[in-house]
Length: 375
Image (cartoon, rainbow, N blue to C red):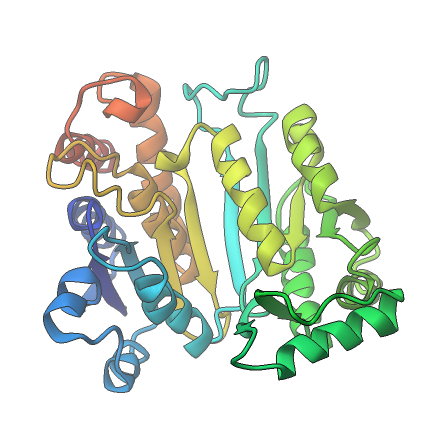
């Protein structure tokens, strides 16, 4: 069996951690009797600065011929924020309809959480973030006095109709962003969360996140979808948390959660909190999943340009993202073996990168994980 995978090292430390992931995954493939056909793409800051191109339609079509995408990192101080993120990362998510963002929040053995008294049994849940709607659809704009009165008048009428408030239309400038949620979009990601909970041993609760008490139109629809989906899963409890409340509960009682499902914006925020309580972003992974199409897997730590080129980045998140990718490709045994190899190296404590309190090089961590995989 051969799996076609698009490889995008990207920027900064992505070019250092991705090769560590590739060598571990290739070894896992050899050990478990399959192969990976890597197709590398140059998308990132260097390519953009050289060509002025972010991601062409032709390149997008080429990427789509692969079943999965293995991404290192995007972002460079030489490029204005948003260009690479929107032009590559978000474009890939939307183009391949990767509507599920899967973020496991798991404290690994021997890793210390900033939460006092909490261990691996307390911090072990999944966050499912809707990945293609909400406030990330890109609807919005800005309007200045003297250039366009249309938007200003629209906002004024909305305020007046909804709240009885009359805002001044001679404001120097306004900015607005519009969130959008479809019943179909909410239903499918919530269904994914319930199905994941059903498949996981001992998991019996789905927590739906929203802010329905204030943004009642959009997140009211989200709640309605959650109720309808939950009716198909009688053995699983549905509960609601407002987004502000769940940030508190992640800290005070992380052991309560099994599977959390959230709209896009709130999910973006709470998953970084999840990464913090599991020991840091050097261990956090992300899967952007289309169950029937091309999915993308990445660490969440970013390009870290301040340490790029020094061979000191932690490759564990990238390798664990690769393990998640293998499982999505149907290679569960290999994915579990890669995860176990990472856990064994961390448990030994002999090889640790700077973010974990050690002085090991990025390549040394990759080699150590490779050795454990071969045992």
